[in-house]
Amino acid sequence: MIDPSDLHPVETSAAGFGRPANQVDYIVCPKCMELLTRSDVEGFGHCPYCDHPFELDSKMENFLLRPLISRWMQDTRPGG
Image 1: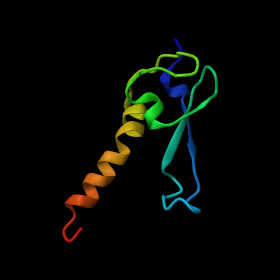
Image 2: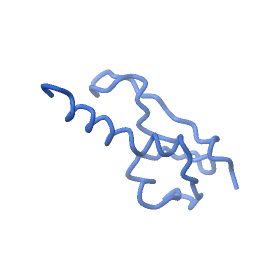
Image 3: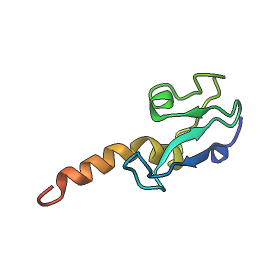
Image 4: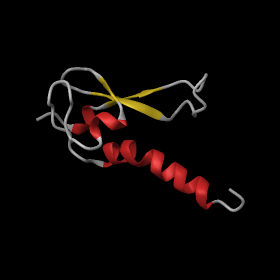
């Protein structure tokens, strides 16, 4: 089995997307090299293209939970 640390995040530019440049929007499957979004992997635990299994490590957890945490932080700020 491939080490989950082989997942390579792809950083996107903030141009036109309204996101910080360092926010990771995709991961790359280490087996088939497809770009995968959160919705591709969050409910299944494997690549929808090649069926490569993903382990839930800290990198994957951060990738999956970042939007929820960001929204929660905005909603709980005073005046936000």
